[in-house]
Each structure stands twice: as C-alpha cells, then as structure tokens.
Amino acid sequence: MSKKILLVSRHAPYGNSTAREAIDMALATSVYDQDISILFMDDGIFQLLRNQHSQLIDQKNIASILTALSLYGIENIYVHQESLDDRTIKINELILDGLQSLNNKDVGNLLSQQDQLLSF
Image (cartoon, rainbow, N blue to C red; front, side):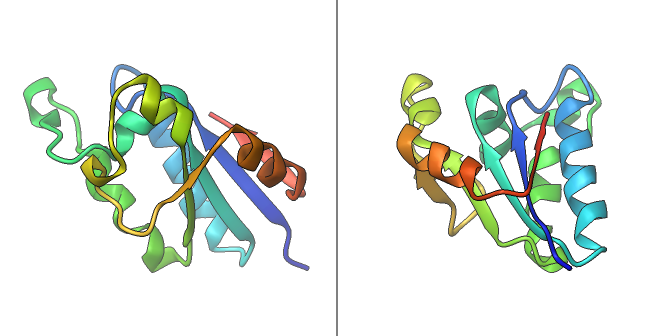
C-alpha cells in the first residue's frame, strides 16, 4: 500500500550535507513505489537556483541532481512562495519547470494530507 510522504527541504545546498541527504532520501524512497512529494522552503529554495557554481567550493552541483527527480517518478515538487518573496527570488530563476508555488495556507493543507513527513 502506497503512503503519501512529503520531504520538506529547508537548508541551503552547500555548507553541510542536509540538502543532499534530503534528495538521497527522496530518490531511495521512490524505489519503493511510495507517493513522494518535496517542498522547498526557507533556505532550501536556494537549492533550486539556476547557474550554481559549486565547483568553486569543490562541491557537486545539487541543482543538476534535482533535474533527475522526474526520472524517479517524483513529480509533486513544491516551493514556498513566502520563502521566495523573503529572499527576492522569482520562480523563473529556478532550475525546475513545473514547480508548484504554495502560500502558507496551501502548505498547511499539503502537510495535513500526508501520511509521513520528513523534514531536512
């Protein structure tokens, strides 16, 4: 039986392994045919920015990994609109097409629909 699982990614892409662990968890969980969704909020939205130059800090570009999510059947990808607004980032500056923008009320509704929440 498939469970609805939401991964909430709140951390910047570099500086620690938290963002990468969230992506790895999403990819690993998708193998078990679960209904996986991902919400990027707070500093987690920086993972989605185009033109990251992670090689300057000897890190693997996390944005390039995010483009593979659909290959794993992860298509429900959300971004928190207030987090974008607070950081003056527009949705067209993000690497993934088809992102669904959610306001605070929408996030609350999404959270209430899940069987499992994983926060990173």
